[in-house]
Length: 149
Image (tube, rainbow, N blue to C red; front, side, top):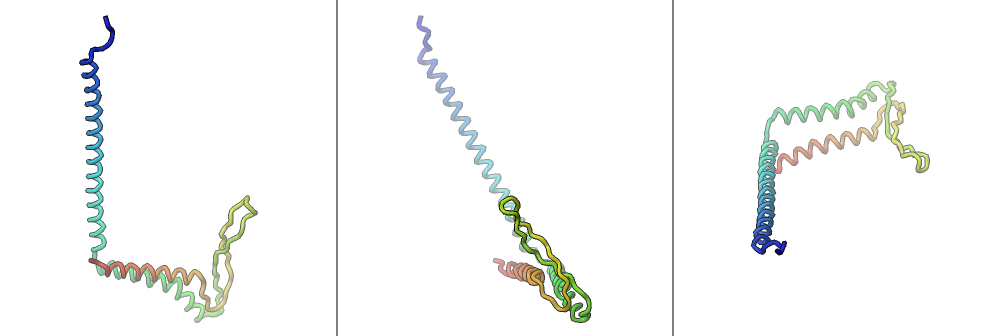
């Protein structure tokens, strides 16, 4: 007796395994396709929500943004200048960052805030940075709002 498997049995087992592998591969591809379709659908819905938010027009929102920008500019930049002109005897504290080097390569550089007393009208780097940030954000938002298709 020959213990070898008959050719029909080998063909049957081989084709069954190959068929099963092909079916699993097809199911995997179908699952990936479905996943991609769902991701595309979610991105389409998200784009719709983003478009709605961009097209949202509310004069109250625009006025609120203007009031916030003008309040920041007035309190942080203009008010200290007005006080310095109106009452020059009042000392003002001005803080500015300065980088202090570490000890060789053992420690990192550290940024520390140094405070100085000043009298009179002073324009600090904080004033210019804050003003440019506020103006940039305000006008940038306004420009982006007018470029609708």
